[in-house]
Length: 83
Image 1 (cartoon, rainbow, N blue to C red):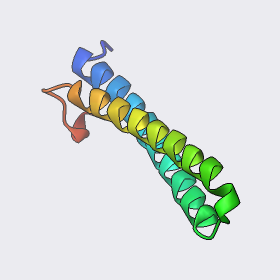
Image 2: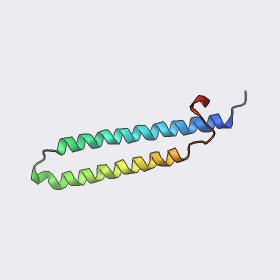
Image 3: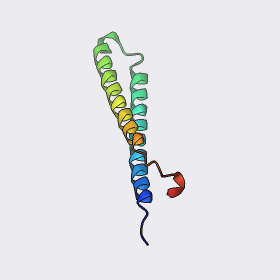
Image 4: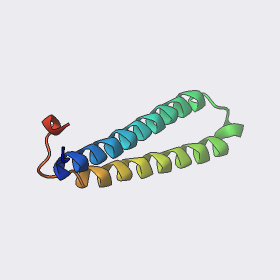
């Protein structure tokens, strides 16, 4: 049986998309935990808290951009029924 190239492109895209989405969601959860944990930080901890949030937001933006890049490469002729 010959595999349809659309099927294989769709499967590859779907795998990449699922991984990028999971990565973004994981980073979002980590960011939310960070914000919650630092909500009542003392003023002495403020510089470290601000830097940690900045780094977390940067990671979040990187993951979002990666997901957007993958979404932009979705095979145009593929549908979920191709799985």
